[in-house]
Length: 232
Image (cartoon, rainbow, N blue to C red; front, side):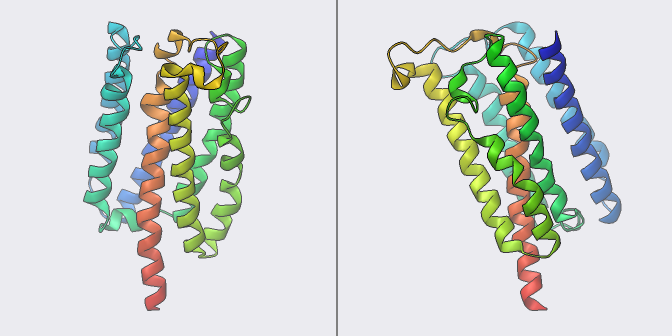
């Protein structure tokens, strides 16, 4: 019960953070989109929960159902949303260091992962006990956020790109541990199907995509700020 509470609690907290960022940006950017954003986020959470109730994604057959029904749509939304807002006052109204500090939540998720492995609900390969060093990367968000406050935008852009690379490695770790476990040794245990149930599915369906969403949003914003800075 404690683990489930941790996953749900962290997801709800990050949802509130996203909503707060949107509301503050909308107020400054004179944009009337906060309500739409609320409906999108709440609707996505309802979709994830309803999908988990069907048990349809509790399956490791190929092609991966959980990827096609959760991760892929979230990535498509990210591309669409960033394209729509790249030249908006909404984007430039967000304090750029906020988007960097957001990534610090990954310290918490990696910590929860350790306890999830101890409970036998997650494979150690995809955590800091194995090959996932996301926690180390996330710790640097505090330093990078400070540098961005000092207008070191180029460093922020590089850091965000590196963050996307780190997430790509994590996705690779999950996929290979599920479908090619022999890569890590013939005695590698099977990936627990339990992790495809709610609320654990919030990791690939919401928490990870939200990190990608903020990374991409931050890159576009920092490039815009970097261009403006050069003009002055």
